[in-house]
Image (tube, rainbow, N blue to C red; front, top):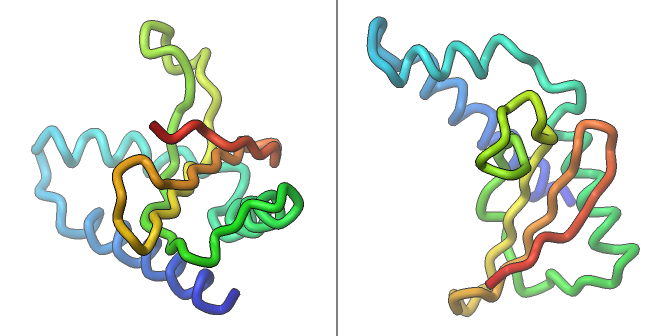
Length: 120
């Protein structure tokens, strides 16, 4: 559990460092500003706790997995506008063996609902 929190803290620090290094006037800088101005209702740390509880409750064995990525996304049909998509945290655990498709992906919406996403 402590390692998970450390990974989450590193992700947040890495994201903050990347925001600080963006050059003014670049398209990357403009897109990061738009994302950075909208603070998520559910903090990353709380979403990770919910995802871990979901994994435990649903008896998903992640003992041989490690948290590869945690990212804020808008989930929904790509053809729809962003306002019609569901904002939330996407957590992606990768298996130690590195096999393609052997992932555990959990989406946590801003209202705290968790769902497992299909992996390949």
